[in-house]
Image (cartoon, rainbow, N blue to C red; front, side, top):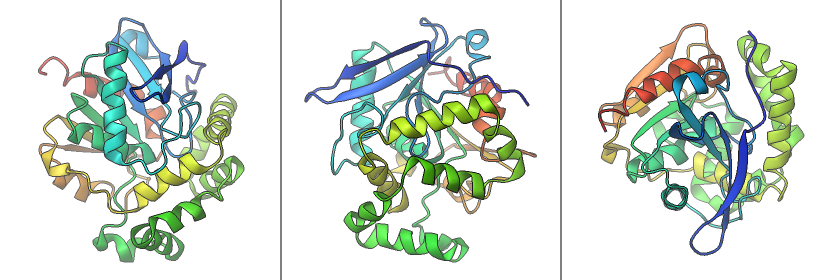
Length: 290
């Protein structure tokens, strides 16, 4: 399967209230429907998706660097709620109104926080990282992951120190060694691999602190009001993806009012790139009613 992974069409930064910078990159028509993108673990704004379908769908895809990753200013001690505030401010600065959003992998809880805060009008969670600190998942986690989750819950600062030891190469090796064949077929494509490795390098350009904070938040107890979410949410998981959610989003969907869970046959964790049109078309379907 050939994937369309291209350089951003537009790129820049916005200065948030308080002076911090938030980096962004865009694909698709400038007058399209704004869809914000919360990317996965340790990746920068440069790794987009669905470039070959954006024009046809009329989607303006806008990826943002979370604080401390890429070119976004660090914000030590930040929370999920802080990110939702950043997104609301960013949308105002760029005249996006109340945009749609896609959250991928470890970007999912940050996107869910935006939905809970009402900062976005609909959300697609794709291969979303689950709240692995939920006690019911304890026995389903590999021993090392269970240890790290326990540390993130008991001592988040110590967990951040552990995660700060990660590198772009270490992240690449972890993904490549732990992914099923259907995902490796995607990740090993030269264009994708080049874009992914660039995004990893850029995410660590300021050091590992941004990734470490992201991961300590994602592996700890979220504290996100999932039951308060009042916007449409679709959860997308590949049938062969067992790495992002122990139950492939079953529990997560049950906690979000009206959430729809999609389990895609023969797909893996690379679902965002292999099924971009399906994800975006479904997301756009929520826009007219909102």
